[in-house]
Length: 187
Image (cartoon, rainbow, N blue to C red; front, side, top):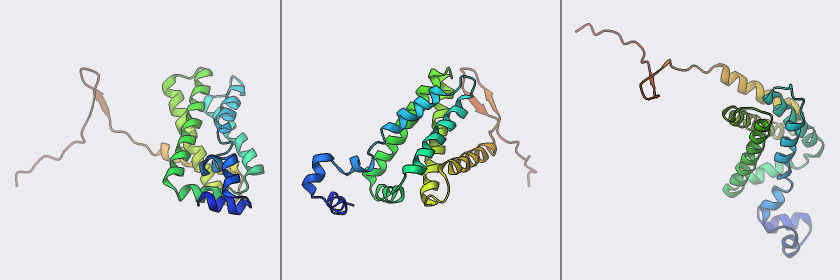
Protein backbone atom coordinates (compact mmCIF):
# COMPACT_ATOMS: atom_id res chain seq x y z
CA UNK A 1 0.00 0.00 0.00
CA UNK A 2 1.41 3.34 -1.01
CA UNK A 3 1.18 6.69 0.75
CA UNK A 4 -1.19 7.78 -2.02
CA UNK A 5 -3.51 4.85 -1.20
CA UNK A 6 -3.39 5.66 2.50
CA UNK A 7 -4.12 9.34 1.89
CA UNK A 8 -7.00 8.53 -0.45
CA UNK A 9 -8.56 6.12 2.05
CA UNK A 10 -8.22 8.76 4.76
CA UNK A 11 -9.83 11.36 2.50
CA UNK A 12 -6.82 13.69 2.48
CA UNK A 13 -4.21 14.74 -0.06
CA UNK A 14 -0.65 13.40 -0.16
CA UNK A 15 0.52 16.85 0.87
CA UNK A 16 -1.71 16.83 3.97
CA UNK A 17 -0.48 13.34 4.77
CA UNK A 18 3.14 14.50 4.82
CA UNK A 19 2.28 17.38 7.15
CA UNK A 20 1.58 14.78 9.83
CA UNK A 21 3.75 11.79 8.90
CA UNK A 22 7.13 11.53 7.25
CA UNK A 23 6.33 8.13 5.74
CA UNK A 24 3.82 5.27 5.90
CA UNK A 25 5.73 3.52 8.68
CA UNK A 26 4.75 6.30 11.04
CA UNK A 27 1.07 5.62 10.39
CA UNK A 28 1.36 1.90 10.88
CA UNK A 29 3.58 2.15 13.94
CA UNK A 30 2.03 5.21 15.57
CA UNK A 31 2.15 4.84 19.34
CA UNK A 32 4.02 1.54 19.13
CA UNK A 33 6.88 3.21 20.99
CA UNK A 34 4.58 3.29 24.03
CA UNK A 35 4.38 -0.52 24.20
CA UNK A 36 7.88 -1.20 25.61
CA UNK A 37 7.53 1.57 28.18
CA UNK A 38 4.09 0.42 29.31
CA UNK A 39 5.20 -3.20 29.66
CA UNK A 40 8.42 -2.25 31.46
CA UNK A 41 6.53 -0.04 33.92
CA UNK A 42 3.96 -2.78 34.58
CA UNK A 43 6.73 -5.29 35.25
CA UNK A 44 8.38 -2.92 37.72
CA UNK A 45 5.04 -2.21 39.41
CA UNK A 46 4.34 -5.91 40.03
CA UNK A 47 4.50 -7.21 43.57
CA UNK A 48 8.13 -7.88 44.51
CA UNK A 49 7.30 -11.51 45.33
CA UNK A 50 5.87 -12.18 41.86
CA UNK A 51 8.29 -14.33 39.84
CA UNK A 52 9.85 -12.32 36.98
CA UNK A 53 8.30 -14.23 34.09
CA UNK A 54 4.89 -14.10 35.75
CA UNK A 55 5.26 -10.33 36.20
CA UNK A 56 6.12 -9.99 32.51
CA UNK A 57 3.25 -12.15 31.32
CA UNK A 58 0.83 -10.26 33.56
CA UNK A 59 2.11 -7.02 32.03
CA UNK A 60 1.57 -8.39 28.52
CA UNK A 61 -1.95 -9.46 29.49
CA UNK A 62 -2.61 -5.86 30.61
CA UNK A 63 -1.52 -4.69 27.15
CA UNK A 64 -3.92 -7.24 25.72
CA UNK A 65 -6.85 -5.70 27.56
CA UNK A 66 -5.99 -2.41 25.83
CA UNK A 67 -5.72 -4.18 22.45
CA UNK A 68 -9.10 -5.83 22.93
CA UNK A 69 -10.67 -2.41 23.47
CA UNK A 70 -8.73 -0.39 20.89
CA UNK A 71 -7.44 -2.87 18.33
CA UNK A 72 -9.62 -1.92 15.40
CA UNK A 73 -7.81 -2.32 12.09
CA UNK A 74 -5.20 -4.74 13.44
CA UNK A 75 -5.78 -7.26 10.66
CA UNK A 76 -5.42 -4.64 7.93
CA UNK A 77 -2.33 -3.21 9.63
CA UNK A 78 -0.71 -6.64 9.80
CA UNK A 79 -1.60 -7.32 6.17
CA UNK A 80 0.12 -4.11 5.08
CA UNK A 81 3.17 -4.88 7.24
CA UNK A 82 3.46 -8.40 5.82
CA UNK A 83 3.36 -7.01 2.28
CA UNK A 84 6.58 -5.04 2.70
CA UNK A 85 10.08 -6.19 3.69
CA UNK A 86 10.78 -2.69 5.01
CA UNK A 87 7.70 -2.77 7.24
CA UNK A 88 8.44 -6.32 8.44
CA UNK A 89 11.88 -5.06 9.50
CA UNK A 90 10.24 -2.21 11.40
CA UNK A 91 7.97 -4.74 13.13
CA UNK A 92 11.04 -6.75 14.18
CA UNK A 93 12.62 -3.55 15.50
CA UNK A 94 9.48 -2.88 17.54
CA UNK A 95 9.63 -6.39 19.02
CA UNK A 96 13.34 -5.95 19.78
CA UNK A 97 12.52 -2.76 21.69
CA UNK A 98 9.88 -4.66 23.66
CA UNK A 99 12.38 -7.40 24.48
CA UNK A 100 14.97 -4.82 25.58
CA UNK A 101 12.45 -3.08 27.85
CA UNK A 102 11.45 -6.39 29.44
CA UNK A 103 15.11 -7.36 29.87
CA UNK A 104 15.86 -4.06 31.61
CA UNK A 105 12.78 -4.27 33.86
CA UNK A 106 13.47 -7.80 35.11
CA UNK A 107 17.12 -6.90 35.71
CA UNK A 108 15.91 -4.00 37.84
CA UNK A 109 13.83 -6.55 39.74
CA UNK A 110 17.09 -8.39 40.48
CA UNK A 111 17.12 -11.13 37.87
CA UNK A 112 20.56 -12.25 36.65
CA UNK A 113 21.46 -10.85 33.22
CA UNK A 114 21.46 -14.25 31.46
CA UNK A 115 18.05 -15.13 32.89
CA UNK A 116 16.74 -11.63 32.19
CA UNK A 117 17.64 -11.91 28.52
CA UNK A 118 16.09 -15.37 28.19
CA UNK A 119 12.95 -14.24 30.03
CA UNK A 120 12.61 -11.20 27.79
CA UNK A 121 13.11 -13.19 24.60
CA UNK A 122 10.61 -15.89 25.59
CA UNK A 123 8.04 -13.30 26.62
CA UNK A 124 8.50 -11.43 23.34
CA UNK A 125 7.99 -14.65 21.37
CA UNK A 126 4.82 -15.31 23.38
CA UNK A 127 3.60 -11.76 22.71
CA UNK A 128 4.28 -11.96 18.96
CA UNK A 129 2.60 -15.36 18.65
CA UNK A 130 -0.38 -14.22 20.73
CA UNK A 131 -0.77 -11.07 18.66
CA UNK A 132 -0.72 -13.05 15.42
CA UNK A 133 -3.29 -15.49 16.76
CA UNK A 134 -5.46 -12.63 18.04
CA UNK A 135 -5.40 -10.93 14.65
CA UNK A 136 -6.18 -14.17 12.80
CA UNK A 137 -9.08 -14.81 15.20
CA UNK A 138 -10.50 -11.45 14.13
CA UNK A 139 -11.03 -10.50 17.77
CA UNK A 140 -13.24 -13.55 18.37
CA UNK A 141 -10.78 -14.51 21.10
CA UNK A 142 -9.43 -12.14 23.72
CA UNK A 143 -5.78 -11.24 23.56
CA UNK A 144 -5.36 -12.76 27.02
CA UNK A 145 -6.73 -16.09 25.76
CA UNK A 146 -4.39 -15.91 22.78
CA UNK A 147 -1.49 -15.15 25.12
CA UNK A 148 -2.40 -18.16 27.28
CA UNK A 149 -2.39 -20.36 24.15
CA UNK A 150 0.98 -18.96 23.05
CA UNK A 151 2.45 -19.63 26.50
CA UNK A 152 1.07 -23.17 26.48
CA UNK A 153 2.65 -23.76 23.07
CA UNK A 154 6.03 -22.50 24.33
CA UNK A 155 5.78 -24.69 27.43
CA UNK A 156 4.96 -27.64 25.21
CA UNK A 157 7.91 -26.95 22.95
CA UNK A 158 10.31 -26.49 25.85
CA UNK A 159 8.96 -29.59 27.57
CA UNK A 160 9.99 -31.74 24.63
CA UNK A 161 13.59 -30.53 24.56
CA UNK A 162 16.14 -33.29 24.90
CA UNK A 163 19.83 -32.44 25.12
CA UNK A 164 22.78 -34.69 24.41
CA UNK A 165 24.89 -35.51 27.43
CA UNK A 166 27.77 -33.05 27.58
CA UNK A 167 31.06 -33.52 29.40
CA UNK A 168 33.51 -30.73 30.08
CA UNK A 169 36.87 -30.96 28.41
CA UNK A 170 40.00 -29.20 29.64
CA UNK A 171 39.81 -25.53 28.75
CA UNK A 172 36.09 -25.28 29.51
CA UNK A 173 34.67 -26.55 26.23
CA UNK A 174 31.96 -29.17 26.16
CA UNK A 175 32.28 -32.40 24.26
CA UNK A 176 29.19 -34.36 23.39
CA UNK A 177 29.28 -38.00 24.30
CA UNK A 178 28.43 -39.79 21.06
CA UNK A 179 25.84 -42.53 21.04
CA UNK A 180 27.31 -46.01 21.41
CA UNK A 181 28.10 -47.62 18.09
CA UNK A 182 27.38 -51.21 17.25
CA UNK A 183 30.52 -53.32 16.93
CA UNK A 184 31.40 -54.47 13.45
CA UNK A 185 30.91 -58.18 12.91
CA UNK A 186 33.65 -58.19 10.31
CA UNK A 187 31.39 -59.54 7.55
